[in-house]
Length: 219
Image 1: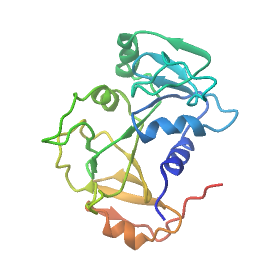
Image 2: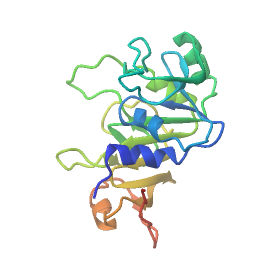
Image 3: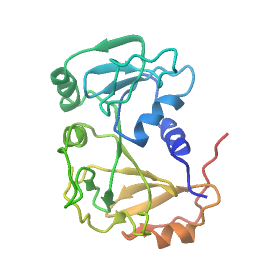
């Protein structure tokens, strides 16, 4: 069975390390904030100028003025800092973010990512994604493996306008966790109950399948 949005966020949260500064992109990546392991010190950065984001608020703790880059209301943890977006992007461009988690429309075997535009549809611009893929070496992409029509989003070559080139090394989809190495996707883990055959059939780019592909486990 394909992973839920919450399970995808849980799996990515396992990649956190103590002391990390982490930027969470718009969409599913924002859910990762709710699954950071207890006792682990991670500072979440939002490109609109907040370092030290906490989980999403409850009705009792909501503050309409406290938002992330996707305009969702968030909380600030003890020790948080609020600053201008110019300082926030200086942090990103200076390489001071340890891990970036982004959504995408397409990723290909060369590590290219297309995440900001579908031709013919109204878009407001690339936003901070261009800076995030250029300024971070450690990026995880969260996305669905295929479109609603069943078309693969893991390609030999991206067909949509690129956000960044040769910058993606890890991809988590609703079916699998993969790494990009030497012009191919390498299957590392599969979602519970999802067969290797299904992943192969829905991956358009070159895919390397090891002899043993473990299932992900969730509590």
